[in-house]
Image (cartoon, rainbow, N blue to C red; front, side, top):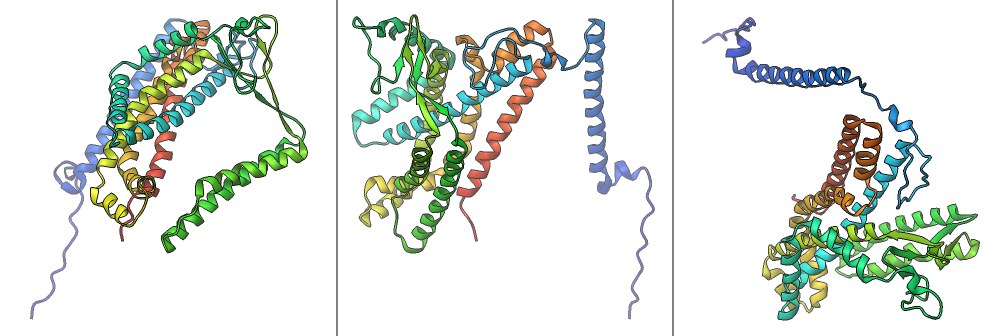
Length: 404
């Protein structure tokens, strides 16, 4: 009979931090962390010392100073008497506006063209190919300048809409005018009770989402589909319209031609239009290739089996192919959304007042706070990129294949 041998713990020695594999990885990580913090500390210290030598300090008090310059496109109230912080906020909102509009438009264009590239119609497939190869092989900066030139040179001036001698006519029953300065459109005016309409609209969106969940569960359980698009559209639009008709909270102001220009309504500057569609068309070409590759990654047997069941081609694409292709499409699509958002910084070439033009342009030149402005801009682009990545990754996880 053998007796168990007691194992005594080896006493800790400093040499174990290097020679013992249990501690060596921790030691290396601590050394790397200390070296990194030391390096960044030296950079900060050296930067502050250089600023002091130039007679400068590091602070953000300049954001409370008067801006003194105008901004041609502002979604929030702003005058030249506003502060630099307000001007930076206007630039941030403008950047988010063109990023959201560009991502939505580019996605629609990319999905449509990506599907058309796989069409059995030779002419349609070739035209889609020409679009993709043309737009993605020319720098986006040139497309921005080209669209700006087209709007400036081809569209009429506001004076062309004047009186009996008008050479241009307003669109949408006389409510929309597209000129070489931009587009003049009807704009909502919020009166008493608009909060009730907003609450109903938000509740309608929630009900449409709940109906979509129900329709999906019903389809999985029974195989029967519902016209979800039209039902969701009715759920979102009709309740708010009914409440607005009852309380009369929201009206629309139509632009009218006065002496030299249109007044009233809303105005979309030509710089925003050029930047918006240039980014959308350029990014849409890349998204089209991503969509085409995602569709081709699905085995042909999937569509053949669906066709054998008597499902129409359009339903096969929307119910069988695209839901599976999304698992391949979403990851590279995130990169395209991030690229579009960062490419919006090219807005300065057409005079669109994004955050690069306000905070990183006029404000920086007036105040001389180059370092502070650059840090704020980099922080903004970092946050918006992380937000886009987070939202898209959450959506990607929701459509990913669930394994047992």
